[in-house]
Image 1: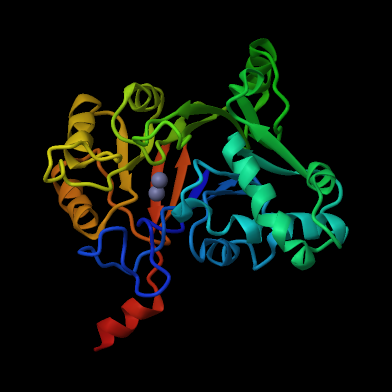
Image 2: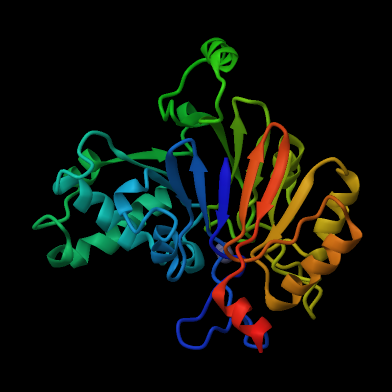
Amino acid sequence: MKVVVLGTGYRKSVTNGKSGNSLEYRDRNDSNYLLKIGDKNYVFDLGMDAFKHALKYTDMDSSKIDGAFFTHTHNDHTAGLYDLTHDAIANYVDGIRPEKGFEIYSSKMIRNLISLVHGPMYNCSPAEEFTEELFEKSTNFVDVAEEKNKEFLIGEISCDKIDKTSLEEINKSRENDSTFLVKPYRMDHGDERVVVYGFTFTSLNGYTVGFTADTRYCENVENLVSKSDYIFIDMARSGKNEYGKIYTHMNYEDIVGLAERYPKKIFIPIHTSDPTYNMTKELAKNFNNILAVEDDDVLEFSENGLSLNRQENEIDKENERI
Ligand SMILES: [Zn+2]
Ligand SMILES: [Zn+2]
């Protein structure tokens, strides 16, 4: 499995690049990813500008995106949702992807958001009118909260749930890394009205990559971490706020605690503010199980370990010359 880090930040402002707190400036993208599984591509959250950014890794062809995961409805994770679903429906209507439903894995809140953003904009839709029926035809929406979908397969063998016995049989026959068992975890983003899911992706070759999504420390963070070998983990904060209230994101101390308690697991702090982004580099120097990533890093996971491919971008080259 390859994970393209489309961004490491959060709540990018449209006008001036400020993140949520006006004291924190940055020019990084929102924490979104492109997951490459076999020959399939899945976006994992889409914030501001993330759809176009993701397309750079799929030959600027939206029909090469096979599905999407949405952790929750906040804007830094869903600003690109309209463009994504617009193209998914357009590709279906135009016969570019007629054979199989575009896959979306998320909660009812995201399902409602899709209806909401398309509803008033029907004149812009690829069909004459966005209808629920057209959406149902073109898209396979999986509500991860539903009991029957607690665990599901994606990739080469996708979506339809299978029982444990047949999974073991498939496992034995697998040689390539193209099918993953996905498990959702309900997270705690500080307000129970904001439904957030983290996910683990378990390769049938044996390793597991986890994503906490936006959350403060909670029991399911512990459950997700204990099941994963590699964890993309929210580290938006550096401590408690001035009122002693715990933030709705994990902080530096939470990550250090987990890294100390699980020395064999690799932690990848993301969704960082500028101060905590700089801290990831210090953490990576002091902990050999913490990895600091940058926007556009490509991480390749396999049963043999993890390799990081950092593309030297043109701007860096320019700076070096100066
Ligand atoms: Zn959030
Ligand atoms: Zn966020």
